[in-house]
Amino acid sequence: MRTQHSQEYFQQAEKVLVGGVNSPVRSFKGVGTQPIVMKYGRGAKLYDYDNNAYTDYCLSWGALILGHANHNAALAAKKTLEKGTSFGTTTREEIEIAKHIVAHVPSMDLVRFVNSGTEAAMSAIRLARGWTKREIVVKFDGCYHGHCDDLLTTAGSGVAQLQASSSLGIPPSHIQNTISLPYNDTETLEETLTKRKDNAACVIIEPVAGNMGVIPAKKEFLQALRRLTRQHGIVLIFDEIMTGFRTSQGCVQSDFGIIPDITCLGKIIGAGFPVGAYGGRKDIMRCLAPLGGVYQAGTFSGNPVVMRSGLAVLRLLTDNFYKKLNRKCEALAASINDYFRENNINAHIAHYNSMMSLRFRREPVENYEDARAAAGGDRYGKLFRHLLHAGIYFPPADLEAFFISGMHTKRDLDALSEALKNFWNPKRKDKTDA
Ligand SMILES: Cc1ncc(COP(=O)(O)O)c(C=O)c1O
Image (cartoon, rainbow, N blue to C red; front, side):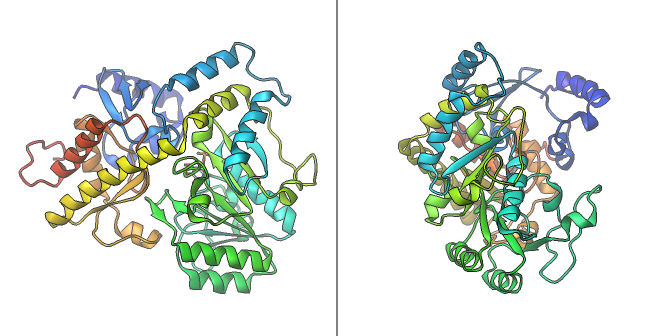
């Protein structure tokens, strides 16, 4: 496969962008090959500067549920930007998308738009601290909520141990009030929340984790979390930045029937533009400026171009759309898992509707410790290169979820299935992993 132009562009990028990228995972560090520089996308396909086509399963890290360059979203963006791009005032676009979100996501009575998922999670935590007048934030090992200082702790630190930061540049004071617990472990959760009930401001969780591969929380675990947080007056925040509008119109909270106090959204609601949102119970949201004393602001928040094209996408996401998409994903996962089982291959596809991940072991994965034990390491790099060679673009990092859009055809999914099966076939001719 020729990627000469990509390589030339990437060399230029390295001269002017840090590591040639604007987000570390784009550097292909863990997959042993040069990053591809993409030129354009259409539907389920991405095209690079050497005119190679790839079926895209990364989809801008889950943002593009309708694939690339969706006609309605593009048209909405064009029409809106012709009227001006930013006014620094309230606009109709914000009102309309907020109405749509409030109508569909059960926990969200009032919404505040921001410019990224990181900003949404960071602001939701400030709001929870302001509302409760408490300091401690409880999170779960392996969940990612963006790069806010308070949340970048190393995982697996347990209840009693001191937290360590997972990045340089974060003063210990920023994480001394953060506790990270094992995912899906009700006993540890109960013990911790009971012990910290007077100081815990909030618990933040991905109700279906997507940043340690895909791990749905057990329903009993989420029920216990809801019961305990309510009992102790702790704010429950669902980070649905990845799952929001990915799995259904009401998001994971309606799938499970468990309603948090605050929800964070991002990715899909912006149609591929920068976006984030948080919202929740009226009494809590009213603590936010200008109604209350918790400050949070943004020059570009609720940008009309983003809001209008985001709404154009949301309007296409009907129950029927999800039914069809989720059914396709079920069939794909079943076909690959059957093959693995019949051929005694030590791997499986874990999925929650159209969020999927490949595990390099047979046993189920329930938490971050399991996820690390089931990681592919170098074999993921080999798999990534094998797929790239077959014209398939997977997330360039182990433990990242991959996604299916409404634009992936049966043919695309059959090709993915074949390529994955072929990777484990000992008679495979393609030796890209050599
Ligand atoms: C669950 C979750 N929360 C928060 C974030 C951060 O969002 P952003 O990258 O838009 O800042 C991400 C990003 O992948 C995410 O998956």
